[in-house]
Image (cartoon, rainbow, N blue to C red):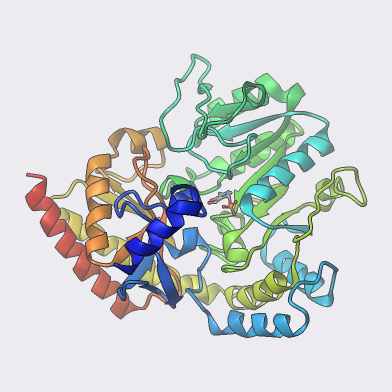
Length: 441
Ligand SMILES: Cc1ncc(COP(=O)(O)O)c(C=O)c1O
């Protein structure tokens, strides 16, 4: 197969044959090597067509190769494609974001979600003059040392005061950053308040994924985000919503627009450019003014706000700034998730789909919906999940697969997933469940 030859070639010069570790697919035992992609279809180098449920880790909400974005990119190329200066387009994009995202009084660009959360934490530290951050177990905020803890490798140990022991998500982490972070469970107001009070003199920020999409899809309990907002405000702690994955996902204003809770700072990535290399830190003017050139916190970069990405992002957000987009995504998403749940019941496969609008998690082993991460992780049947992920590949459907995590990865639909494509997918999933049922006996 052409993919085997290309993979072998890549392995000679690329570690593991991949340019991003997460692109190695444990079930395929190689990455998926694509020739091109369009809408919700991906075309591999061996001539196969795939239905996409990965959507580039959630970036391509409008599907691959959207004509409006393509047109904007051509326009940017004519203007000189890479210009490391400001332009009228930069302010236009910030105005758009500001109209859409409630906390976005001011905007600063970054190149990736990881860079954005790193910057947001630095702003919070610069603004408060304090060091510690609180992070929640199971939340993911990118791969820098200040946050790369307790995501989905294993549960930490819970102490009597309900703090959770630190679990590094990568080799190469250092003990020194352990001292700057406290990990607690999400969705428990009492633990939250007690922990904030315990550390308030040293606490710069609480960072969270308002919807835990990086653990599949776990929503905040009713009232929890409001309480989080209230208690951080009371104690002078900066509240950061990491909306790199939840931003523009279920509402034009992201999770903060959807739940009606406004943080001090927000990080945006992925859908903000629908595939362009762009991210943003946005927030209240008072806090954002900690940034240079007004304040002393330095956040800058050669490629930050590159013209190509900015113009692509404007085209994407102009489409996304429309509640109808999310109504339609919600309708098709709910139809998809309900029908997968019905198929699970039909074939007596223990599990449930939890989804909110355009993203979802397949919780094999879980029988009732939950917003408790530890309940989801405790019930998760990793063997069934791995079997499913392997078998859908045979049917040429691509789901996010990072291997043996303790909760599912997030999967997603895009505006290119029409009802006939969803019905075709449900047929293939039914075939997978039939086979799983036989093999799991
Ligand atoms: C919530 C969240 N924060 C941060 C990141 C890191 O973003 P990036 O991969 O662009 O560095 C991700 C990526 O999946 C994410 O989901």
